[in-house]
Amino acid sequence: MTADPTPDRAVEPSAPSAPSASDVPEAILRLSRSARRITVLTGAGMSADSGVPTFRDAQTGLWTLVDPQDLATPEAWHRDKPYVNAWFLWRVHLMSAAAPNAGHHALAAWAHRPDTDLRIVTQNIDDLHERAGSTVLAHLHGSLFAWRCDRCHRPAPTPHAPAEPTERIEPDSCSHCAFGEIRPGVVWFNEPLPDREFTDAVQVCRDADLVLVVGTSGVVQPAASLPHLAGARGIPVIEIDPRPTEFSPFATHVWRSTAATALPALVAALDRA
Image 1: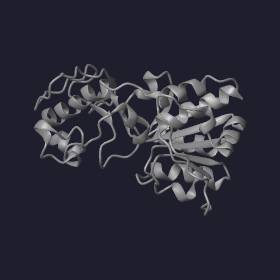
Image 2: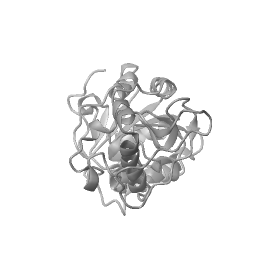
Image 3: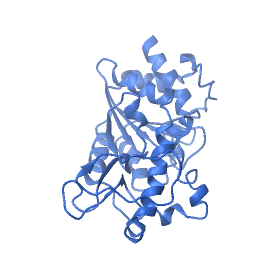
């Protein structure tokens, strides 16, 4: 994909509480109106206005001196399951307290427009897209709300998350096999991405009319390669992010705004057309 040396002038974000359809850049609106198959790639910036805690945000209190990369690994799990389990359940509690923002709701509304096939591929492990009413095609890094057995890998209910941080919580036993225990359904460091999710993500980046990249850094591989697959086929790719990213030079159009501001404005403009 060839980088555009003169991307669209960045649009300053309007107040998230009052997005305006008139703020949408004309080129972005034109592409969005004509697209029927839309693929949306979302990252941490998608949930930023919901106050979703990052790894570092959860690194408080009992875990102040602990590097998250020493907790989110298969090695850490097998070394001390109750300790790792307790940290992830604290993250479940923190994420459960967050609510979908206007950007999440806008994507759900866009998906319900006539003649629209909108596919969401996310790097986020929260469930805010689903709680806003969207169907997520692929959670590339897994989900904190989709736990499974560490032996037989069958799905299991999300364990109860205490409202106060606890240093150690014994993991639940698997109800399907004799030896397994229930672990978070996220992709840990040193683990591969789930095959089906990544294959589906590749497919919808290659067959889309339009790809939106929302709130991703463009650094984490292999997810960072996905929008380039679209660009290589001549599919327009729009980046929505308040700050420049590694992908910005390769985007067809760039809109410097937050997801919670830009997406509601864009859907409002589509509804007005």
